[in-house]
Length: 378
Image (cartoon, rainbow, N blue to C red; front, side, top):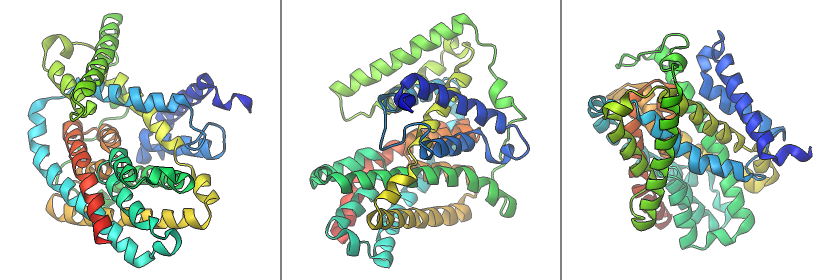
């Protein structure tokens, strides 16, 4: 299929997957899974069946969705934020996130001593352990910061293999964090009453979008992205996600912007496109092609994340027992703020969107330090 790399074809398929995810999510079985989880599963299947490009055959369209669509979708979702609801969630989430960060480091260490990945990876295993600690605390920024320090990016196949495994584990963990709140709430009810949207409510609450609202939303979204991108050039210490989020929150408090219709559905649709690409990056064949090396990396990273999850869920369950909040915090660790925000939106927990951004930024600050600490210990 020569057209598989055609961006219009791929975007058409991704758009169709979003449609399927939403419609299947309304069925009796689909309601238990949710549109977000279904979209990830569908695109993962299509990518592994070579219907659309995957991580190893990534096209510029995917980079564009990660670079532009994800932050702009967050901006639109924040235009519905009520600041008073954030205070209640902030401190518990920060506490859980710090716990989850150290649980990640502990998971790497436990996995190292139980699975002995150095037998296959050699001395590179310690660096990989630090890189994985960094990325499962903060994200790819920390992953690459540690890789650059040791020149690991020059080790082509091993570096690419580690990224492939990281993509697969991250996608699988999104699926886990979307699913376990539903499962655990049946056996160990949440202390926090979970407000579930009525059928189709999340897709119709601001359906009356008009041309005036649309033209202003497009202008504000693009303008906010431009400002955040420019500020990062002059003040690189300030993450662009913080700037665009701050702009969204401030604008949401104005009367003019609060009256604009359609920001929620527009943001939600863009989030679904972003999640579709996340699913496409779940390339199981890339891990299998690495053979023993890939399997070692997969079990090492996977078991580390499982340890992180068990500790975070158990401790969080005994202290707060808000399964959706725990899932969002864990996702902020493993996948970063963008996927954590997608989870908050999928759970209809708008009050957790801003705390998810904040703890995601905290992860960027902690990740590199914890990564180097793990290397030093090993």
